Amino acid sequence: MTNIELKILRIECGLTQSEMAQRIGVGLRTYQGWESSRRKTTIPAHVAGLIKETLKALNPVWLQRRLAAIEEFQDDYEEGIARREAAKAVPLEENQ
Image 1 (tube, one colour):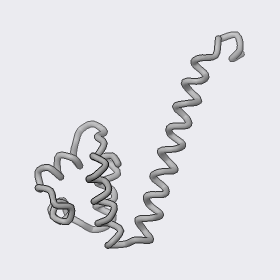
Image 2 (cartoon, rainbow, N blue to C red; image 1 turned 30 degrees about the vertical axis):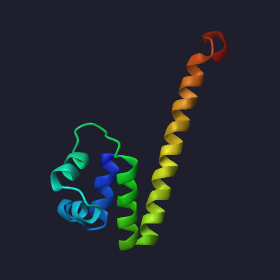
Image 3 (tube, one colour; image 1 turned 135 degrees about the vertical axis):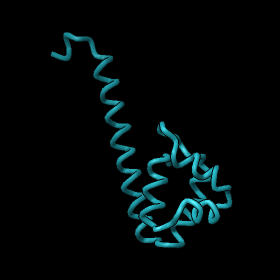
Image 4 (cartoon, rainbow, N blue to C red; image 1 turned 45 degrees about the horizontal axis):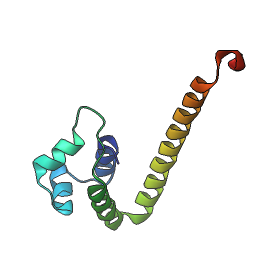
């Protein structure tokens, strides 16, 4: 889970940063740091798990659909990178 996904999920569930921080048991400043990083940041796996469990309790069906969409996007993104890297590895004559 990235900082961008974290923020979107929190907002869509109608929680403030303070409420989310309390629900997952971290300080507000820590949570704000994860969410507002200027660069794409990956949230630690154990924290992402806590966040998912918290959001499931609020709206399990919505979260399940949302997480499936995020995973599908990540899979498509990774496949695109792999195709690009494979194309780079093929000699120029074979690409034409």
